[in-house]
Length: 221
Image (cartoon, rainbow, N blue to C red; front, side, top):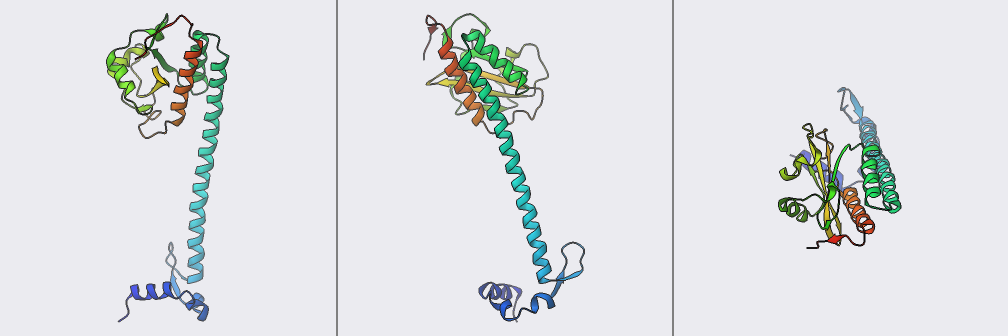
């Protein structure tokens, strides 16, 4: 007795079968996938093609949306780059960075710490060795609900922060770290892409090295 698997293999091996018996495409009736009524094989194939087209259209719409979002991020990152190049000193650079993060990226909570140089400003405050080691061992920016406990007070007394991004400031050497925080638990999540965050870290590190005074004391490890 022939089994359904045998019929399936035979039709797959003999695609010319329906060329020889074209009337079967309309004579054979099968169930509609949704309402149960009988339809022809050709009608069922049309329905299958419509489903595939709808799936492809959905994927295309997602790709277009991701492309538009990446374009927007690129424009915002370029504004930070232009501001960094235009900065005359570290104060200008940091002010432009904090302003762009707040206004362009809607990130009101950010903090920079630079531990390979000695100068004035909260950005040069003492950083525990535990935080330095944590940042130095990051292969890429780290996102999620976790922030090193020794860095939690860098955002002041805010208690509502739920997600964080830690971005090493690296240009040949790791000069420090940029921390971002949000009250939205989904703003920074572990699976999110970090390419733009890494580029931001490299950009700020290069800018910091450029604008620091020539007599700044660098403590290179």
